[in-house]
Length: 161
Image (cartoon, rainbow, N blue to C red):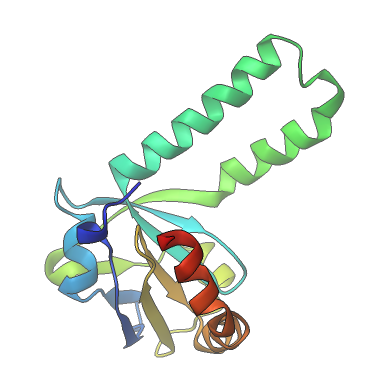
């Protein structure tokens, strides 16, 4: 879990160029690239991708996958084969290793572009989500924000209390 000093925060509007490149502001990119330029881009919810520090993402993913594999080996998931297959399908397409090039530029890979719903020359919103950076289709971001902002005070009190 990230400490408060490590929180990635901020909201920026950016334009995707004709090669699906996107410049990530240093305030958002620097915490992700402390150990190098390797990052993980993940599909989150329709119209949204998240960009993670590769080591943090891999640790998070490995621990979850290892628990599922242990349950499979012990036979505890034998009645849930469809759920296991669904997990496998989603794992197969959910994330991809990417690198931030010079000036913290990200190329949005094919398959992720469609999920995000972005076209060349289109705008996206970059949002610091404490432990990762999120890339949102602007309309989806506004919808999400409008639905969630009223919960802010209660959320902060619950997490801080």
